[in-house]
Each structure stands twice: as structure tokens, then as C-alpha cells.
Length: 144
Image (tube, rainbow, N blue to C red):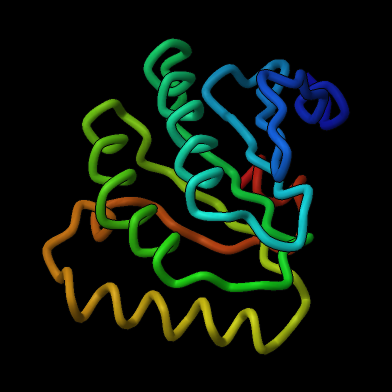
């Protein structure tokens, strides 16, 4: 299988602020791509509930979260994502996460500070046992 085949994607579900895709030729990978500059927390939770169903149904083990279009960092969404959603998904086999951040240094610093706060407040979270890494491209996120 060549690189191009691995990166062909099928849209699984579309939302106002994001789209969920699966990767052809790599059934264990799903991609959520932010399509807006901000995702309200209610929509964020709805999007990740749908991803959760996909994780259970398709046995997804790796999620790529492409945040490049986001310009607003929202700590309550990030905390819910780490402390509640990832806890549940860990039990269903989703243990690899790749994130692609916008090039905005303020956003990147906000993410770093947000993760440090979550780690301080929830030091025993299952997210600590996940393979969470950042990538600069979709290709790198999917393939590594």
C-alpha cells in the first residue's frame, strides 16, 4: 500500500464546526478536522460523542485531531476532552492521539499551559497512559 492510498479519506459525519473522517486502508484511524475558528463546547461534546460511537463501532485505536483552523483556545473543552472523554475512550481501545495545532504561537502556548493545568489537577488520568503526540502535517499525524 502506498502513501496516497493510506491518505484517502471518507467522510463519516459532518458538523457545523468539524468533520469526522475515516482513513481508507487504515481502518483503525479516524480524523476529526476543525472547520471553523472556534467550536462551542456543546458542539464539541456532540462531535466527540459521534467519534466515540465510531471508536466503538469501527474499533478505532488512533485519533488525529486537526486543529489548524482554530484560532480560539477553550480550556473547559480541553479539560472535558482529557478528563472525561479520553477516560471513556481508553476503555474502548483508543490509545493513540495525534494533534495538529495552528501555527499561532499564542494558541500553542495556551495548549501547553492547559495540559499542564490538567496534569496538575488530574495526575492519575488515563490520558497519562496514552500515546499523545503533536504533528505538523496530516500525513505525519496519520502515519506516525
